[in-house]
Length: 291
Image 1: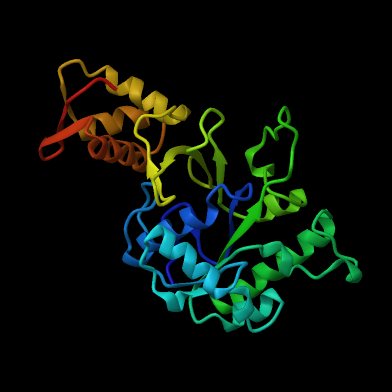
Image 2 (image 1 turned 60 degrees about the vertical axis):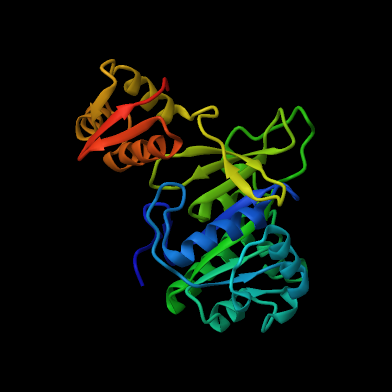
């Protein structure tokens, strides 16, 4: 198996997290990303390796099918399981049972041994000890987990400034997992979502979406760019001739300390998709509209 399922942001043999409040669209976003993963299409601008998976929902198989039907997403039904189909109620049993290298688990923390054995999802020691045992099991069986996690309930005026702490439970959960995909509602409109990409060893980024009539995520272009993208947009504005050499742009971004070469090329790729840049030759693009 490759070292990464998604280059830079999803290394194998680790626990990753999709976090957010109930009803924000964690399952919907995951289904859309997994459909791209099956075909090896880029995800959030990063190259992916075609990978099969077992998606384990916290509802019945029939409930998962209804979500797929609502979205009109054609995921192979044999890859989607309800909790009622699991071989046991321990994470070790699920890891050993899964025929696929990637396992996505909703309500992941419910699999933690219960409190009568002295465990608590709010305890750093017991949560950390359990997560370490899960990581060892993943390495032994060549598997990777993406776990769903809810956000804690907060008053309207409260917020955790560290985004990785916006997952329910002990801080050990944020500390011992790898990449977090944090989904949140846009503060000003009910029909928009913000995805915070929080990897360990790649730049953090924000992606903005609106929900279509089927509840699917559709990316919004040019909405409130993060710090790195804002700096890249400013750099793009310095090219006043209306054309630029992509290689020169990337070298400028790297030498200025804005981002890595890969991130700069990912930015240019997004600008082409959005219609801001038009390819006019090998390594050359035309700026069609202000950034």
